[in-house]
Length: 375
Image (cartoon, rainbow, N blue to C red):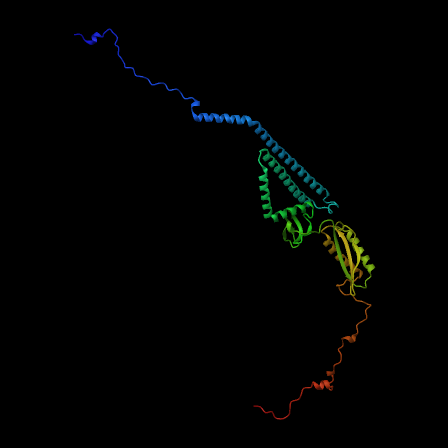
């Protein structure tokens, strides 16, 4: 009996494996087969086409806006520099005339400087507003934005703001015109109606004054209805002297002229007097006095000092010349008749004689004689 292993020795062993069927190969999906990818591709294609069609327009608009901004900035810089040079030239001319004889007729350097700076600030602000505002409107127009609703809204807003801040607008406009017209400046003595004093600061909204007692007044420019400037040009010093009606007018004129000549040759009155001291004549003639009027043209703001000095010197000169001033110490008058010594004696009285009926009537009644009955 043979073993199967011995029979298979020397021959290959064949094993039969059952065939297992493989699944069919699945194809890879294409981009065109996916709906979302197709829409994305279409969107990219449309965007590329839109950019290709409009890039020239966008570039033109961008270059136009850039050109507008560059021109506006350059124009604003040129205008501001020109205004600054103009203000500097005004200040230089003010410093050139300061300290000369003509400088008093004009204004001092500080006043000119503040006025020029205020005007320059207003002009620069107005120029910047106009240039930048126009550039902004041109940019909006280049972007194809309808400006009609915007302008209408801005107009309504401007009317509302102007109505609510009408006092502020009034003060600002009044200050601009006061500065432009040079109605007053720093160092001037003015009467503004609501207050008076020396101007220490001029603003577009408020004017600052220092009163005679040292107080500081803040006056809104819109409240100033009239202004009396006591410092522009020249001032007048007037002195009225009352003398006896019996004085010699020719002698009075000569004495006043001597005083005026001496005053005009002394410092600092030779600079404060801008004209000769004149005797205008008789201002008033009464039974007990007559008034002589003296006048002189002076530097602005120095009229009161000149008046006080003139009164001082005229009083001393009149006392030396024997001219009597009303209100002074009375002088002896030789032309008057001596007083009657009997004017101080009282009139005789009827009561001085005891036997007169008036004295008898005033004699007290004697008491009755006899015993007195008392309780």
